[in-house]
Amino acid sequence: MRWAYPAAALTCAAALGIGVFGFWPDRGEPERPLIPNASVTDLLAHADAERGARLFRSCAACHPIGKGAPDRNGPNLYGILGAPVADARTRFGYTYALRSVGGRWDAERMDAWLHNPDQFAPGTRMFFQGISSAWDRADLIAYLGTQGSGLLPGSAAGKIE
Ligand code: HEC
Figure (cartoon, rainbow, N blue to C red):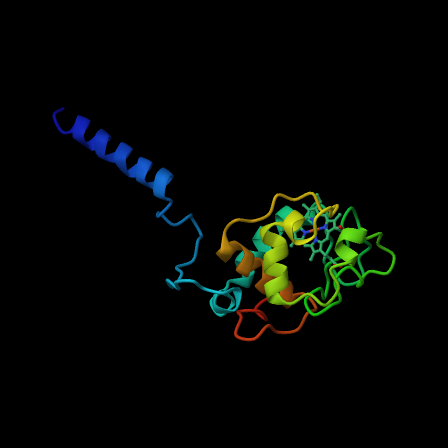
C-alpha cells in the first residue's frame, strides 16, 4: 500500500518528537499552565497533591509517612513541612551534614533538597539522585503538605486525608 510508508514515517517522526522534546504529556499528566521562571511557590498554586502521592512511592522505600509509624532507613515524614530540619524524629540518627543545616523545612528548602540532596547538605546519607522536574517536586511538596503539615498557601494541599 502506498500510504503505508509515509504513515509509518510520520509515526516515527512523532515518536521521535515525543522522545526528544518531551512535549507529549505523560499519561495521567495534568495540564499545566506555562509559568516562565516560576518559583516553587508559583508552582505550588497549581500543584497536584494526588499526583504527588503517586510520586511519593519512590520515597516510600525509605520513608514511612503515616502518623506514628516508626522510622526506617529514612525518618518518618509525617508533618515534615514546618518541622525543624533533621530534628523532628528524635530517635532517628541524622547525619551531621543534615543537622548542621538548621532552620525549618519550608517549600523552598524542600524544593532545593529534593532537587539535589547532596548539594543541599553535602555528605547526607539520603542516597537519592534528586528530582529534576520542578513540577514533580511541587506535586510532591503539595502531597507532603497534606500529611500532617497543614495547608501550604495556595496549594492544592488538603485534597488527601
Ligand atoms: C534510599 C533511601 C531514601 C530515599 C529513596 C529517599 N530518602 Fe529521604 N532520607 C533518607 C535518609 C537516610 C535521610 C536522613 C539523611 C541524613 O541524616 O543525612 C532522609 C531525609 C529526608 C528528609 C529530612 C527529614 C527531616 O526529619 O529533616 C526529607 C524531607 C526527605 N528525606 C524526603 C524525601 C523524599 C520526599 C523522598 C522521595 C522523593 C526521599 N526522601 C527519598 C533516605 C531516603
